[in-house]
Each structure stands twice: as C-alpha cells, then as structure tokens.
Image (cartoon, rainbow, N blue to C red; front, side, top):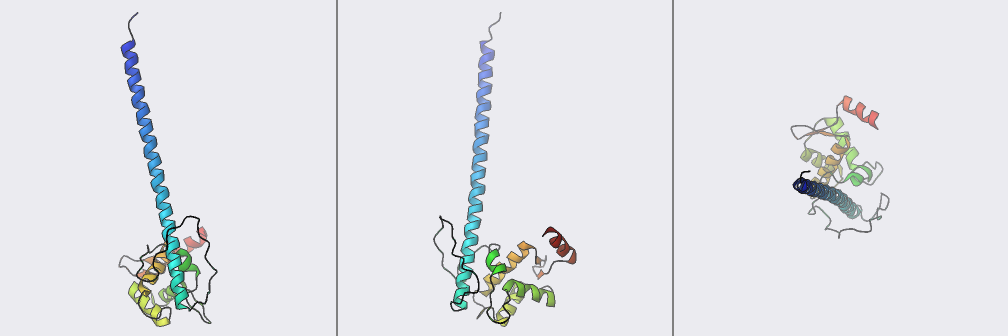
Length: 188
C-alpha cells in the first residue's frame, strides 16, 4: 500500500480554495444586491423629493389652492426635506406623479403641463426645450421663466420615459411616430 497522505493534503488544499472562492463569490453577490437596493431606494427618495418640491412650487403658485389629492403619505424612513424651488436640483426623469398626474393650472381648462407640452408638439411639430418653456410661460403655467426651465425639463424627461414624447438626435422633442403609438396602445 502506498502512502496517500500527500494526495489527501492536496485535496484538502483544493477544497479550501473552492470554499474560499464560493465565499468570495457569495460576498460579491451580497454586495451587488446591496448596491442595487441602495440605488433603488435612492431613486425612490429622489422621486419623492422631486414630487414634494413640485407640489410646493404648485402650492405657492396657486396660492394654497389644492387641485390634486393630498400626497402626505410618506415612508417611515425619509431623508430631510431639501429647499423647494428652482435652486433645488432633481434628476429630470423622477417627476412621474407630479408631471403626468397633477394639473399645473387652475381655471376652466385645467390642462396639465405634460398635456399642454404634448398638444404644442402635435400642433407645431418638433421643438427645443427652451421653446416649449417659453410657450408654457406665455400660456400662464409659470409667472415668469425663473424655475420654469427645470420643471419643463423634468416634465419632458418624464413624458419621454413614459413613451408619450421622444427626443430627437438634434435635442428637439417630438411626438412619437404612429408606429410607436400603436405599439404603446398594444402594450398598455
């Protein structure tokens, strides 16, 4: 009989290496999941922050008249409020609820800003963001152009994300092609 202790030591070393590799792989997966989770929470918190800021702007603009349901339902853990208004920066694509749901005008024709922008794109054709901002100010959505640019940008980015508007390679915004609209209706 030959001595197999050397072979067994080699096998032990190989198994330890495999265990270490499996543990390292597990740790990488855990870290990746934590990063994805943190990223999702960050996006959701930024979305909530942007909606709250936009609600504050609308509340100030409309003089305390609420035209949308009260959105005070907040998660148990929330970051402190940031300053409201145009100086506060938000990620453009994070204003879904406010841009598409809350009316941004008061009066007989309560048209939402997103609806107004899409209507103008349908009437006039492709427009740059600054042109759409100017039209929104002229239409009375904003008292002046201060802060209007950011809200129009956020609304445009959200409508692009939702598929209601597309951004052309020139940077202009336009309504989607007929084939895109048919695809959206089938998906919805």
